[in-house]
Length: 232
Image 1 (cartoon, one colour):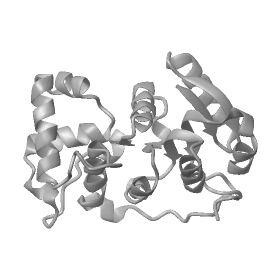
Image 2: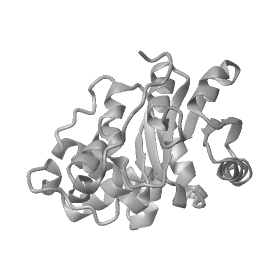
Image 3: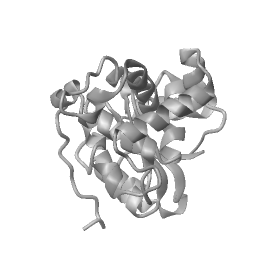
């Protein structure tokens, strides 16, 4: 995977790029920038597979706006956001308006390279991936279709949200891949999602509902978005 990193803190940016390059065998960091403006100006490095960007980029434009710009301009096939704060609710609306996958990771989790890899791969595959620290013990609100899911279905849905493949979910839960596939099909059907609908990733749609209709979601603060030059 060809990755562009945008992070305004020099030391963290250097450590992040080094960790990606040396710790994940199928990742190549094409370039790293300190701001959205620098990244957009470097036209020779685009397009790439995934943009990995901090949300808070200091005084410049934020990573959410940069991600939307990169997605709609086809600069990247997937976007993974980094933050010091638990605000993954930002992902609820964005994916439906952009033709790429998205991820949201806490900066404190980037030392877990397996999780980073899952987020990068999931975003590249058009899915919605959320830091596992943010999906633990989420409970569906009573009015949500999620409330009708079984305990096992909610367990599988949480792992889907964390970017786990069907094979990894099967190994984690000590069940067969066929059982995982059947469970996911039931989740999609019970949530009223049409897996045949154009321009909809059914797994991403399930995760979006998971973020939107859980109790802890109400505690997530909104992110102020700023305009990236050229986006109107």
